[in-house]
Image 1 (cartoon, rainbow, N blue to C red):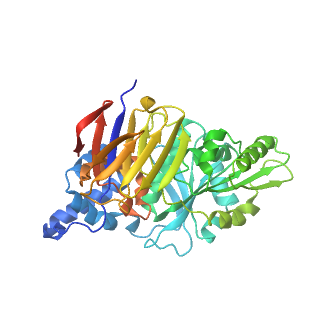
Image 2 (image 1 turned 90 degrees about the vertical axis):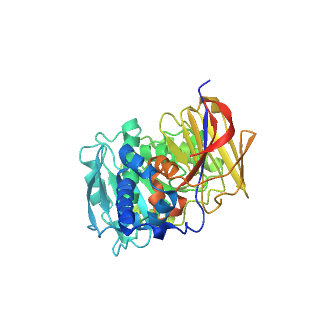
Image 3 (image 1 turned 45 degrees about the vertical axis):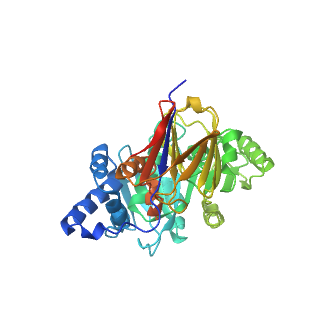
Length: 403
């Protein structure tokens, strides 16, 4: 049995500390500059420096340190990332003082397809309808591979700190091979995307993972004579989802493999009706593998074919996960809009009950931010500033440890 780590991460709630303003102004400026750099770059070295800050100082400086509050950007352009680049279009009248919905667009596999899809096929429609459009580039366009997932998450992590994005209204779309990627990552990261738009892509996610799309906006387009991506696979997936009670808008056009730009406006208007539901209770099926991630407020790494179910009631949280012995890590991070500092909290994991008292820690913030950079997306109150460890190396600690 692999070691099972249970980290209970709890966030600071409500009013900030009262002693922040007693610090020298120069100290606050240095801390703000450090925090702003960490929010955007998120390196281990910067994280260690952030850990040395007082949690109340981090909390007080967070909103004003968001990178998207920097001087205005060009309305369109190209951003280099560690593994690739992405193109972006901002809506007319973009204003960084308020959050905006964002559409992430995955291209197909011909050379130069990122530019073609972004500039020609979208043709400014997303920005005209009030969406930020970001289009990551992946050489070869094979989004189902691990490097595709890396580029996708890297793009989103950069975009939500560079632009003021509404974290409840992030959508994923894709054409051809990008459509296949949209089926995969829309279901795998259903906790991040409020909806998906698929054009002539193969539904590679299995039925178990497609069930994650309950409550999300789903708009699917395919060609009846598609010689590249079999339309029958899409028809079958749509039938299965509808049988499972999942609402799907499906449009089939005559002819061959195509982007069908005429659906840009109706699809965006449809998806805009959907936003991420409040995570009081949620379920997710998937293979978490070796990539650290946070699903709403539960962080996991390792293992295959898990079913995660979480419910919050008052000052208690109940968590059930299948095959926990296969997980390397299971973390729980709780939103400040639900839980208060210094108040006992009951947490049950697979029937095992713990009582913890969350206390603020910049170390917890620095550890969690790289796993879930989407905190920056217009709602810094979701940041985790407290953590409690209750189980380590598969053993229950006699006294839970705050860090």
